[in-house]
Image 1 (spheres, rainbow, N blue to C red):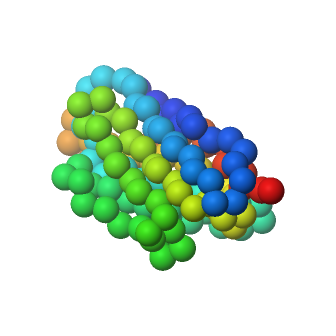
Image 2: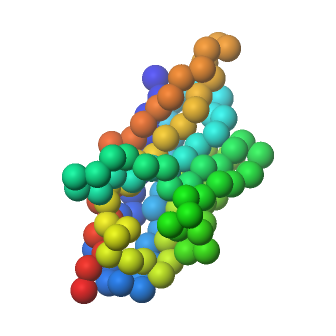
Image 3: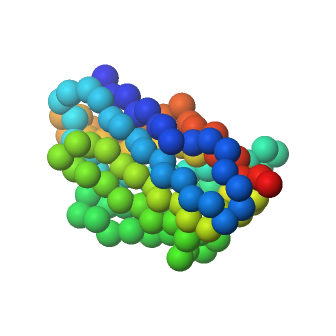
Length: 119
């Protein structure tokens, strides 16, 4: 009943910027915290940034000062502004949401969007 769709990925040069979006669809659910994860080739998935329903944020040390997570609760959309991109940021970026449906809590994931940082 809940779908998350990422967009905004692509190829960018080192030092460049990219803005990812995560749009949600469906009815009858409430979104709590949301987050961005990424997985590089041959590596484990890692948390990039987290944002609560109230707007409190947490970031991985590797992206602090460069990435900014935000959300528009009216649109049920989350964003990740990525600046000063580095080759090591190359990964598939996934949207995640903690969702309540009739007092039941579950996790929802998007299909991912590729971000490639290369000269």
